[in-house]
Image 1 (cartoon, rainbow, N blue to C red):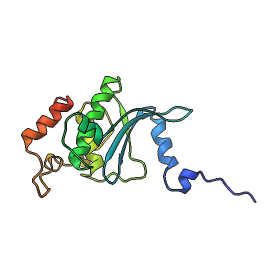
Image 2: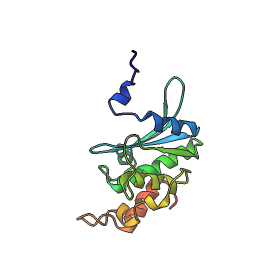
Image 3: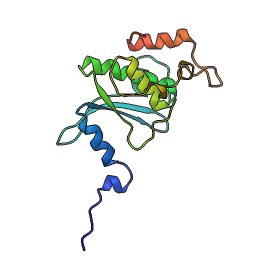
Length: 165
């Protein structure tokens, strides 16, 4: 009797190969959103037989280099990372992406949905359901104790990224 080989990343619970194959069949570049304990990472990844190639990466530190005082992985930071990804993708001629959330679940009104909303509003096409997006008040942080950003400050941040909103 032979035993079937199970890939290491599947065994460790890091990769769902069935979902990955479905994403790769689309033929589009993937919008990879990962949220860590203190940061958000957004990447545009292209499939290659030798291995996936990262076309561009945007993190919370990238926002700080643009002069934005946004830290952590809040909904606001995720939204602004999404806007920056869309801006850079359009500069490289990428207009259509497919969302790859990995092993995470896409939660209605969550941080990944906020990043997706930023990419959509930055004029990149990604298949989505608009009902999952958080409302604008949540993105600006009005649900937080400190009251979040004012609409004027929010528009200033969007203007610094260089996206018309």
